[in-house]
Length: 370
Figure 1 (cartoon, one colour):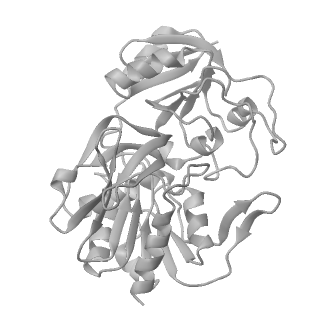
Figure 2: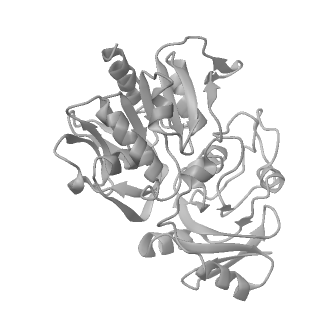
C-alpha cells in the first residue's frame, strides 16, 4: 500500500510500484502520452514528483538508451495504472524494477484525473508519497515542504568537472552516433542539461565542452568558445547568481549565446528582467507555441515552473515566441548582439521535433562571428 498526501490536506490511497520509504517534493502534472523514461531522467524534474496524466504508463518497459542523463532525477512518480505485462523489442527492464533499482518512490492506482484537477485549479503544491498506511505522517511531511521558490537546484544536478561530449543522435539498428568534427567550439553550461540537446549540437558538427554550473566567465573565455550554450535545469533561476554574472560577461563580449528553459530565465535575469513562479508550470509534449514573425505554430515539449516576465525585458530584447495556452513568454532575441533563447525544450526527446530549427539558428550565429 502507498499514500499520496498533498499540502492542502488531500489524501489518495494506492499501491507502491517503486522503492520503499517516502519522498517529499513539489507535485506537478505532465500531459505527455509517451516518453516516461525520458521524463524521469530529465534533470529539470529534480525536486518534483511527476504525475503522468496518460492512464497507462509502463507498457513499453525501460531500455538502456532512452535516457536524458545518467539517473532518474524526478523525486517520485504518480500514475493511474502500471500494466503488469510490458511489450517492446528494445525493453530490458520493467518500469517498477527500474524505479526500485534507483530508489525512486512511486504510486499507482489513484485517480490521476482528480489529482490533475486539484493541481490545475489550485496550482502545484508540496506532496508526499509514503509507502505504508500512515496518512497522518504523510500529511505532516507534505505540509512541511518549503516550496520551489528560492531553491538553487542547478548546482546540485550539474556536472562537477569539465567534459568533452561527442555522442550524436540515435538511429534504429545503429544506436547513437559519434561526432568527429571539431568546429565550431561550443561551451555548454550544465544546469541540468538533457543529453539530447548535446546530441543535436554534436550532430551539427560542434566540438562541445560541457562545464559545471558554477564555472566563471573567465574560465569559459579561456576555452576560446565560438558560442556559449545555457542549458535547461531545475529550480528557481533567481538564486543562480553565478550563472547570471557569467552571462552578463558573455553578453558584453557579444559572444553567440543560445539559452533553453532555465537558460532563457538566466539570460533574462542577466538583462535585468524579472522571473515569476507559475501557478502550475508547463509540463507536457503538446504545447502550441507561436513564432510571432511568421505566425507559424509549433507543437513543443515543455518543462518549467518559472518564466520570464516579458513586460520587464529591456528595449533591446525582442519577443519571438509566445505560448498559445496562456500567452507567456516562450522566446526572445537581442537586437544588438547574437543572443537568443527559448523556454520550451526544442530538442524534444522523444518528441515532438517541430522546433529543432533553433539549433540551426545557433549555428548560423556562430558562423556569422567567424
